[in-house]
Amino acid sequence: MKFLLLLLAATNELTVEQRLAGREFPSVFQAWSPADNLKGEDKQVTLARHDLVFHGPEFFGLKWNRPQIGLATGFTPESIAQGLKRRKEILERNPRTILLAEIRYRDAAKHYLPENHKFWKRTPDGKLAAGWEEGGYLQLDFGSAEFQKQVALQARAAVSSGVVDGVMLDWWKDDEERLALIKRIRKEIGDRALILANANDRKTPLSAEFINGYFMECYRSKTPADWQRIEETLVWAEANLRAPHINCLETWYQNSRADLNLMRATTALSLTMSDGFALFSDPNTLPTPDHLHDWYPFWNKSLGKPTGKGMMQNDGTARREFERGSVVYNPMGNGSRTVNFKDPRQSLTTGTKSKIHTVQSADGDIFILVK
Image (cartoon, rainbow, N blue to C red; front, side, top):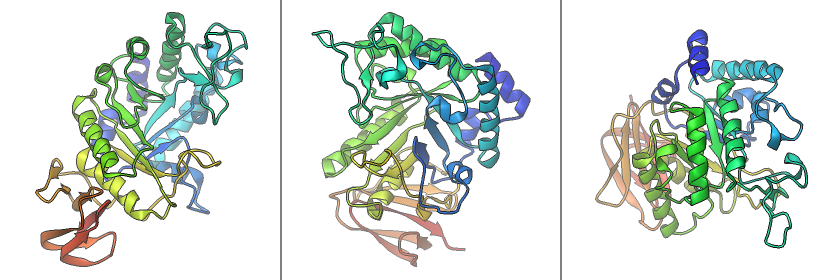
């Protein structure tokens, strides 16, 4: 961690806290897969539209120092140099971007470890336990203290490389084994490095003090009860997880990427109830890579910075003020709502300039100050 701080000073990079505080909104993240609708745009330019990116260490140019990744404890010197170069290129395009490396602990591809290695989890009859079905993964024995130590060493290697700001842990929930693991990881990476954990729409009070943010991969978002649960978890995470907060809210489309009301609702919920990041993406059931998404004009940074906290309104909506406008989130099941302003605002949804606007149920909108 000391090495990383010296590196930041030497390169005149903004600290994590400065990058988070200096963002303008909306603020969008990338979960592994990119936005793929901006044909002809340089891929690195598209990447830089996102203010937080998490992926495997290899995405950032790092190469583990063992052929079988599960046995590696660090990265090759050449790849660290390459990773630092890639980091510099990303931050030159977007100095506010947060970079996180996924560290596997729950399951992995079959070549991750030797076939008969003790770190694989086994069923009661001695067979290798199946993991993520879509990837053909096998489960890892993250209840093993020895394997927990290995995972923590890999997390430390990622942070110590200086290439990323922290780590991402998938498949997260509160249980005794994961609590022991997160304590080891936090001890190894230090207090300042970031930890993002995929808790979906669940709260994890036992491990909250060790985690900076949830990757809220909200695969359940079809009913008013789903959206209420998502909102409650996001609010709880902003209040109870470790600072600085990096909560990442993602929902999936239901019919197509043209479910624009759901994209706006997700974005508006993130904007009103958190200082985090939003994403609206493809559902995992598709045969294409998970989390592919469009880049929507609604996500262009039109609002500036927030000027206060989001507030629930008497009509059931949530509203928040920003330097250049306001955001309104209207939950599913709440019915159409009329929004009034003292001065004219332009709706990003309709393009209409007026003091009075309408926001439908399961929708949200950004209202820009009219000069």
